[in-house]
Image (cartoon, rainbow, N blue to C red):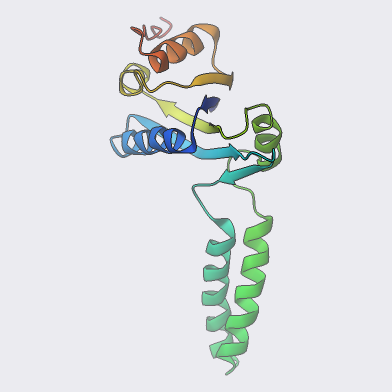
Amino acid sequence: MSDLIVIAFPTEAKAEEVRQKLLAMQKEYLIELGDAVIAVKDSKGSVKLNQLINTTAAGAVSGAFWGSLIGLIFLMPLVGAALGAASGTLGGYLTDVGIDDKWMKETAAAVQPGTAALFVLVRKVTADKVLEGLKGEGGKVLKTSLDHTKEAALQAALAGAQAVAPSPPS
């Protein structure tokens, strides 16, 4: 089962720094992320999402490859590549991977203009080591699917206090 965590930060740069820290921890197999998105609210109140994966670009590249391959079979590689890229772009644009974009924008509307929110979908975690790695990073937990003790431990770690990781049930 995955857990969803939303943390508000004073700047986009700080949210990106924490996201990069989580990605580094993922490379060490301390955490497995399903998604990590930064939502930034500008001074006009509009929310922009900074996704890890650009599905539109990935769809265009994949579509161009398959379109070229099919185009080669029918001796029309350029037409096939163009049609493949166009359909791949459309497919990528319509694809939503991880956390629902609409929900993230609605949730990020609650943060102050000029600030950012980090949305993290956690599949697996080694809690004590991840909390230690996030110690003192700042930020405020806005929403989470964690239980109250784990949420308190996360908020304490972000604040720099001594976080006590909850012990696993016996």
